[in-house]
Image 1 (cartoon, rainbow, N blue to C red):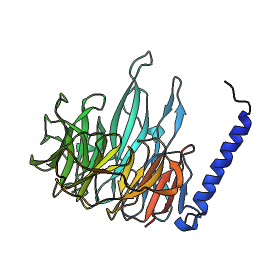
Image 2: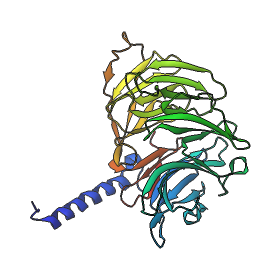
Image 3: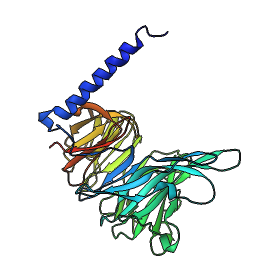
Image 4: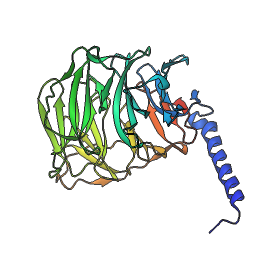
Length: 378
């Protein structure tokens, strides 16, 4: 059925949107008269370093004789606001086959000078135009030079969720063991010598959270046949030492370790976030908050949640982390529903991040997808 007054409906929707944005930029309570920074580009990914610098990717498309391709540019904004391009995407090529890529995420090294950029790629694999999706991780430094592994390539193929080791000289990452993205194996490489034997060869994982110090990781392990329950593991990255922390009732995603390394949180299903003490794993809490993307506040007292999955728009809320306790029955953990406090007047955003020094909250707006930086509300 065709609406009788489509233009009126569009105008009403635009009015509501304008009111919402007026609230965002005029609320004295949250000091949001205007953003501290507005990077007016089509942002596909970004990340803060420890000093407030921002590495970010911008959408860039170009045409060839046969295809319309996308190769994102990568930029760095200094803490003084100056910007410089680290990578011109149109000049980034690998092999003879045409491909497109978008930057999915960034991760800084501990020393703040090296960058890992995870790329989602679509490659034309034959003359009929058939394509194949995959991912790779590109290594850069903060001056824009590609970092070559063992004097070879600057790209780790099939490398997801990569992170630098604590000495800034090695990389750990996940590689697909069961496709598509069902289970992963853990891989290691050194900048000087290249690929290394994995301490956890033959084991498969649903997900891994790398620790801030990068001497060990917290992983959700599951057997290759996916017949057993997921198990929470503490894995030493420099030896084959591991410790099972808990058997989980389920795992839906989002594993994240708090800044101090004291707590871990993850979704056990599409509704419930489980928080666990890593030193005393039997101390736990379950919160009914709904599946989304979350980040710890730097003081670990709160969790900020975008109420939507990755790359989808949702509003931002925060809630307090409750006291953890030992339940009377490990399989009958009480579930609470914490009060959720809205941030940025319930306007929806596609991405968000809290700076490591807790000074800034950055968001990517839907639509044009520009990057806005505000003071982090304390």
